[in-house]
Length: 172
Image 1 (cartoon, one colour):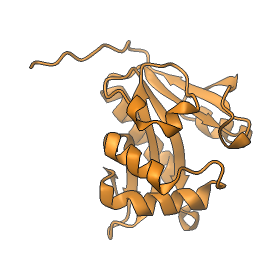
Image 2 (image 1 turned 90 degrees about the vertical axis):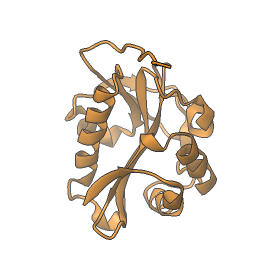
Image 3 (image 1 turned 90 degrees about the horizontal axis):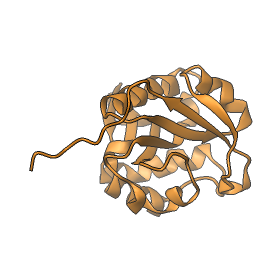
Image 4 (image 1 turned 30 degrees about the horizontal axis):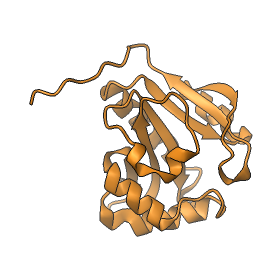
């Protein structure tokens, strides 16, 4: 198994696994995934087997906005590569690969990468039944989110790093 970032050739596989995980009102479309991969492939973490078959993935975008809002799902141009917060849109495991610790493995990598990128932390929304899962990584439940994505009640979860985010200055 290997963890890598997405490329345009991964879009169909990502869309297939996404559609298997979420109901249609919550799942990103293949076109939305294509736009996201084009705008921020570094914010897609894919866990693949030795044959490059997609087992699980986490995706999102970076922004200076502190809360995950519904407009972020639809507008890939909102991504800021130097953003203070890593937003997480989905933590998705292929149905035949569930309950093997793959999502946890990926989440640890995403947390490490966000910390290494100098982010203030990560933000995601989840259903009530998953609050405890994310708390195990240090996320704090901030209560019910304003999000109405997919007409579902979501909890906003935040993992804040102890160091402060600093804008990385370009040498050019």
